[in-house]
Image (cartoon, rainbow, N blue to C red; front, top):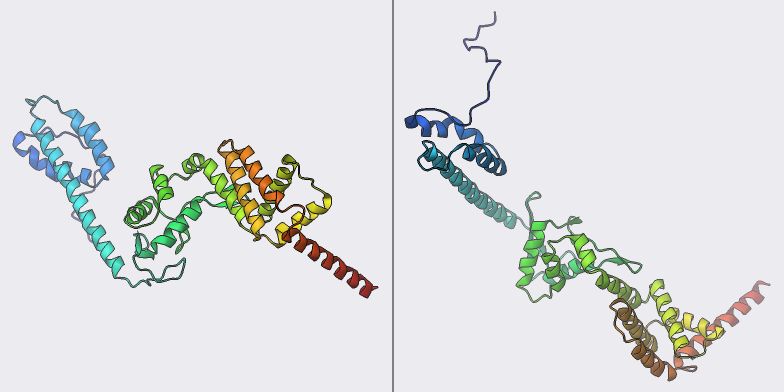
Length: 333
């Protein structure tokens, strides 16, 4: 047979626990430590502060002669001590976690350049219990590349990411990276501005709109394999020829398009590309240097039009390709 329990059945009706115990003053402080303060300490710090400021502290008269004034002072003192103890233990726990993460063996090889790291930048991840090492130069370049990321001359900045996990850095990690890079010889103007904007990507995009667009255009123009950059350079040369009154025939237009596609690193095209970048800069930042740029274009183009080594090289290649095509057609027929 089951044995009967000697415990009394729990009460079904429980009233609310009073916030202020009306007990004799001799036992009031003991009761505070035993049953009144215990449920408060089990709460989070935010809830404790809100409960203290709205319920406990508001229930006492600020008059120092009030009988419960000493009780309120004792309660606040206990609360402050408990907050300070939590802070110190949290610091100790973080120091222990950092020590354990540093003890783990990590390769001192930069994940971006695969070169040995001399003065590493340490990035800690508490949830993963890991410490990631980066080279200062490669990490700074990676952050800037993400902040100025673009696609087809359209700025699309991204949050700086951890290449180990392919996830964005947290707010605390970005602050740690910024403080560590400050003590190196790296140029961190962009990261410093991003820090002043509280690492808010949308605010960064609005604040740096013109600079982002100019960077996207410059990257497309400086990329010899970019078709958009080739079209932009060709349009600039044709428009400048029209402004400076150089005759643009259909034959020369065909030669120009092929020259940009076949020989993008030619000295003449590099000089014209520089003028094209300056033209876009003056347009975006409202700088009135259009006439100066057209004068520079005219002086440069006058020495290389209609004959120069580049145009002759392209024309010879076009003739050779045409003859080869005819020979192929004769062989097929």
